[in-house]
Picture 1 (cartoon, rainbow, N blue to C red):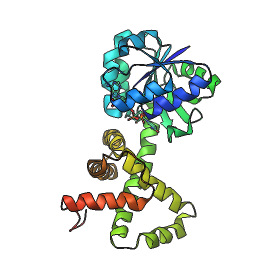
Picture 2 (cartoon, rainbow, N blue to C red):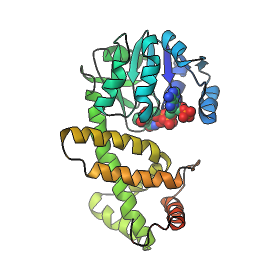
Picture 3 (cartoon, rainbow, N blue to C red):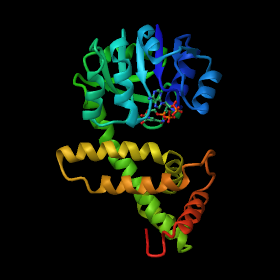
Picture 4 (tube, protein in one colour):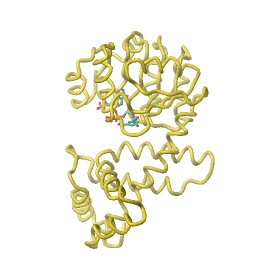
Length: 285
Ligand SMILES: NC(=O)c1ccc[n+]([C@@H]2O[C@H](COP(=O)([O-])OP(=O)(O)OC[C@H]3O[C@@H](n4cnc5c(N)ncnc54)[C@H](OP(=O)(O)O)[C@@H]3O)[C@@H](O)[C@H]2O)c1
């Protein structure tokens, strides 16, 4: 069985590592991609193809792991060349995933969503929907943890989007609350007071959310734009729109981060420096 990855970032490199260990044939194409992507793919030992179209032709299962804004673009590019099953794993709204999958002319499509961080490896939970989802679950025999939650495209993405509305909304609220506390010199106290009602794990999870938000703000912003779209179709997005703004401000300021900050104070120091440079913060956010 040959598994192809469109895009070779954190998701593709992590899943490839596990699949290669199980003897699966894994391939990608990095023509025209960034040096980071080329380096990741080079180190991983996957087979490299000259074009995404060629990759689409030879893959039994082709996984789209690009970025949310590229989900449709990449599906349009390879749509006529897919011979196997095409799985969209990007964090996009049901409408976007349905549009992307509509370009796959053989119709063998799956809507898939990774639940949580992929760094867990092959055991990360992936929910799927669509008539071909069962074919994707064949990879469970190599250690993946894929479950089918419905037979309609868009169902898996909707669940994922609503989960993100909650989890990323909490992260944005934490960023705003604790940055203010940090500026006032009472961040430790605020963390401790909230932990009194939210439970022992609150402090660690709050700190981890702030640090990872700083590293992935751009991707999260794109994902929250998809959440806004889903909520607009069904109701009145207010919190999700504000969450987009918080992540947008964050990634514009500290997009250049290459290394994981070790403490949340490091993130706030960077924010403080950038806000000062741009005269943000004298009258609040
Ligand atoms: N990381 C996670 O834990 C996680 C969890 C759940 C869902 N997801 C979703 O999974 C997808 C991939 O996430 P990731 O963390 O792997 O992202 P990432 O690390 O940013 O990697 C994205 C990869 O896609 C490539 N790419 C972008 N546009 C492309 C295009 N048009 N054609 C081919 N390749 C393209 C990028 O290449 P360049 O370097 O050249 O830009 C990069 O190799 C995202 O949609 C994300 O929302 C991720």
